[in-house]
Length: 189
Length: 189
DNA sequence: ATCACACTGCACACCGGTGTGCAGTGACCT
DNA sequence: AGGTCACTGCACACCGGTGTGCAGTGTGAT
Image (cartoon, rainbow over all chains, first blue to last red; front, side, top):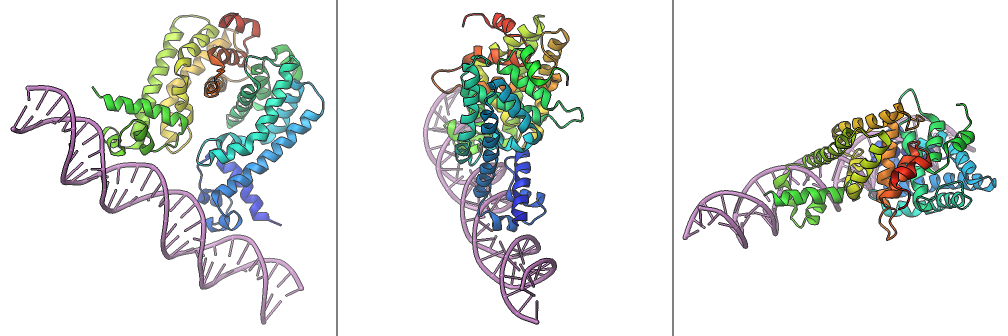
């Protein structure tokens, strides 16, 4: 039923991923609707942002817990995570983009669960010896996560690097030896 | 002579690194000066930004060409680059932060030279076989560069990861084997 | 003493984004 | 046909940041 509301959220995820400072007007226009209509669904900009983040966080935690529950090694779980997230990676740029900015504090709070799950996965990998320990889990997870989305961002030109390259890169930076990384990612493209 | 002007630029680098959307008022306040005074030195906000970026870009290109001219292997050059940049890495967050945002286009243009030098260094490393080729130089350089500053950003807590961890991480993600990376970075902290 | 000059402390106009109010308009339901 | 409901298309007030004008005020040089 809530057709417009859903489209609004989809479009906002996209628009704000490109420009975190985009206003209600731009989002409305991108959704083929008038600004006034947006306020009909979300009483304020912050309200829209919050709903958006909650949705994104829910999807991410779902993927992470699912992948974690398979009982696989941490590096295998990471590969599965990136593979699951990659197809919609551009949707999740917003997670990174909105941490700074006007409502940064509010948004940052919403991201807590995701940060925790990521850090836990990396810690598990470090404890079992598959990930290197050159950085504490909380930081290493953010860097790896950031690298994956940075690569997804550069994915505009025709010759796209693709999921394989992003997975390889993140595995390397997590300290997985090249041989093992190649085996995990499938030796041939 | 231009004491206030210089302090303004220093402070702006710092403030804008924390919040790219900081206004002239915040910058002025942080410099212990009144907003009106800032306009006495820089006719517009964009003008301040441009001056700032030119200064930052000049410093970066200086370091990069210098490090490049030693004729060292690309991985050694990268280590030297990070070592030289690290002490003031937080100053250069602004380079990343301001690419998006209001004057993104203008700023992006200013960064061309730095991007090119970085990509050239990485390409040199790939051609001589010390860096992996899982990503094209233009992207790999940006990811490595981003990782270094992401780590510098997380450097707030008492137990700071430090330059060593940042160097290790970037080397790994560039595809340098752990053994070689440890040798380059000095086997003991 | 006076001049230059940098900074101050107000005033103001302007702009763009937010959020609201309210009278339509059209589609769909019954 | 009548009613509901979402969207429209204006109106508006409000806010915060930008950029400017101008009359001070203090300090250092001569």
